[in-house]
Amino acid sequence: MAEELFDIYDEQLRPLGTATRAETHSRGYWHRTFHCWLTRREGNRRFVRFQLRQASKDTNPGCYDITAAGHLSAGETIREAIRELEEELGVAASFEQLIPLGQIREDASGEVNGMPFIDREVSDVFGLVCDVPLSELKLQPEEVAGVYEADLDELIALFEGSLSEVAARGVELGDSDEPLTAVQRTVQAKQFVPREFSYYASVLRALRGCT
View 1 (cartoon, one colour):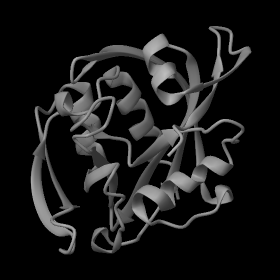
View 2 (cartoon, one colour):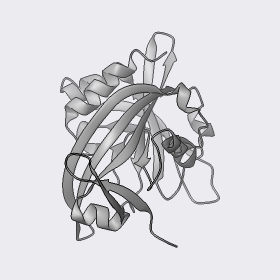
View 3 (cartoon, one colour):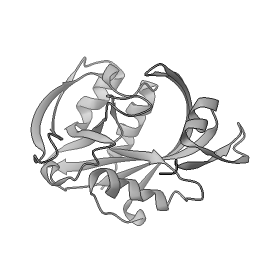
């Protein structure tokens, strides 16, 4: 199977051509990604969902992360990248349902299984109001090990440092023949993909306005 190709850019986001996923992360080319945070309201409370990345991922394995996110393939537009929602979570939505929350740049580096990586991304960030029960999600086994939700205000407090941990409930993949397993987890900020905590706090605050 051919490796996925990305459109790559220089520091000023001028197109450089295309590169494979491995080349992009080994050479530190800038590329584009899609972020989408799922949220829902229950009475006076608002909840936010986040995923657990599979342990086999080539960057940040086993970390909590954005509800659904992914790289734009070569030639793909941000509108087309909404496919990530259905691929990773089984959630069908139109681009018009997404609530734009801004664009960020991230420049990270590290090592996974002895292989160094440089991950330079320009990400368009969106919110989506979604009432699909956790138990009805269809997780993509290659990408997502679990999905959880926690109180929005508690998550903001977590990333702003006034709470050390928050309670989350969620579902996780079991064996291939088993349905999703309901779980309770205690979550700490350091368990999320390493980013400036201000990214998480600002996105979560913006989600308060999603209706």
